[in-house]
Length: 366
Image (cartoon, rainbow, N blue to C red):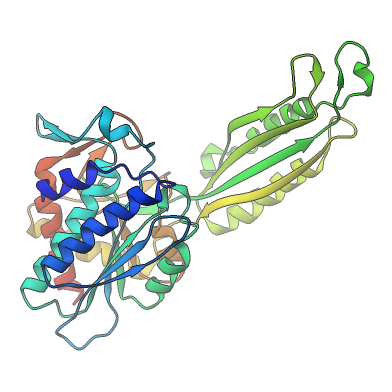
């Protein structure tokens, strides 16, 4: 498992690096071929290809248990050369080591293990996607269609540093905002200008005021751009907005308020346009997902782990699978932390027991 992990971590695979993501997918396709497991590659022109690996069931059921994960990372090309895979003091490091290449390796070995044993009672489907870190613009339809036909989804995002799994996640909407003003010389004819930057500043203050920490709603303007020159009243300004929320009704409420802020001009003559760049749905634990967690917790105990459920502010593809009514459990991958940073790590001694917990969960669902 560690040897395969080293191989795939040492492949740059940022979300927009199609050749890199395709190389990770191809490495897993070769792994499955070596183990006699049937695969299907789902080609994509812009983003990386996706992969399905299928292990037939022996119990007559036709709804598969899906082991899910994404092959892309947040890191730019060249990151591997700067800090390749390594292990020190029981921790593996490298770009994407816990988020989520260790989970992919774990899924692959669980699939291979069940295949070697003649299959579980239910069919197993490994779903390896390519663009989760940017909101799954290409893979979301594939994820939702797969979940609609599934019995359950186990998403191998990294286990929490506590060792827990994730039973609930926030939803997220990622938006672009463009403000248009009018250029004018800032000294010669200042009064003729309409400052897009000034208007954007008013909107940022209003957007941030929508944050309600007690209800779990946050607004963050994380990127801003604008202006023509220091001595020109800015004709254009742009921002990127991150909305996080807990329940679906909060999304509608927040979006209504955001749209009202965008439509209102504080600086006379300014106008603005808002669009959605990407989105994740929240993972809301229903009765089916509660039962799945119960099965997993018992399976984990059998593997020597004490596991509880946690709520996470981050988003994941598990929100899409839960939203179509499929029982879903997230962060069942090996334990790790500091994702999206150079300090990202994965606990080496967690990969085998977490794989055992997953394999035992499959047996319980079957």
